[in-house]
Image: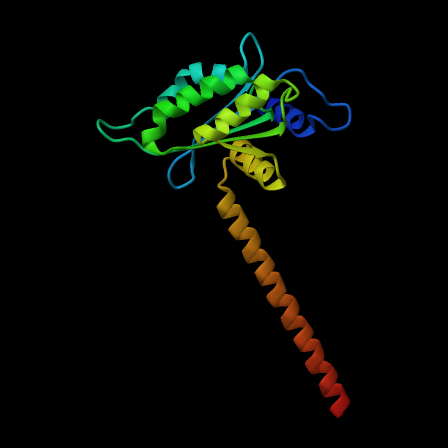
Length: 194
């Protein structure tokens, strides 16, 4: 049941702004990665009484994962927000406040989104500029971003391992096909010499 719900959620994320898919709600997937790129926490949020970014900031599970882990020591993390809409100016302010409170840890904070949210409004334009000036990375979605979110959120896999496997497979296929063509050339040379 939860898997189908996750697929529907991701489908809306993927389709926002294409064809006739223009949801008013914001859909947000949050991934927290440790220093070696493993997912240590993930969750999803959807617009309700509060915007998803605010729901995330209030979530005890999220707060626990971004707090100091051991007395006097903290693990640096990468926080990746994937959404169908960029944050509004109010959420941008809240995210900046959160990020500035952790800046000394040099966490990496990425917000990637499918569509800019109401950027005809100056406040939302300024919200995006302020996020950027604070050092939060803003990205429009790419196929690489989607691949990473799908692999990490849906399947609990590490994208680098999947990419390496795929690279190794292509390399091996190239070797096999090259060997096959060399064998064919050798066969044709043998038949010519007969």
